[in-house]
Image (cartoon, rainbow, N blue to C red; front, side):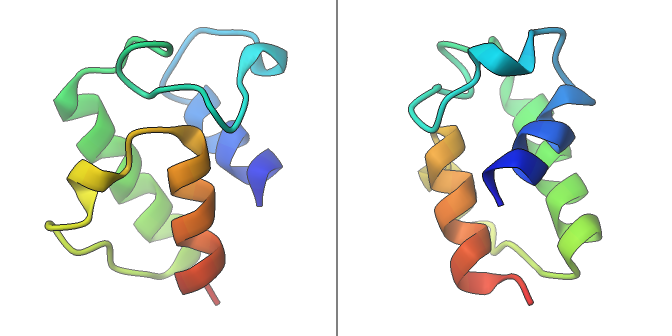
Length: 75
């Protein structure tokens, strides 16, 4: 799931995927804006056929947070 997460993130950021870890912070380390985070969440929803509740989005602060959410909720 980590590799697929990094692949999707790669569509939104210009950073070498080898520099992305589970601990990479979406805003502080990857330089994403809050709007970009929402667009990324939408991409994950489309890719995995899930819905991320609005109340969950602020808790997705790191790549690992996204991976954990997807592993628990994606089919």
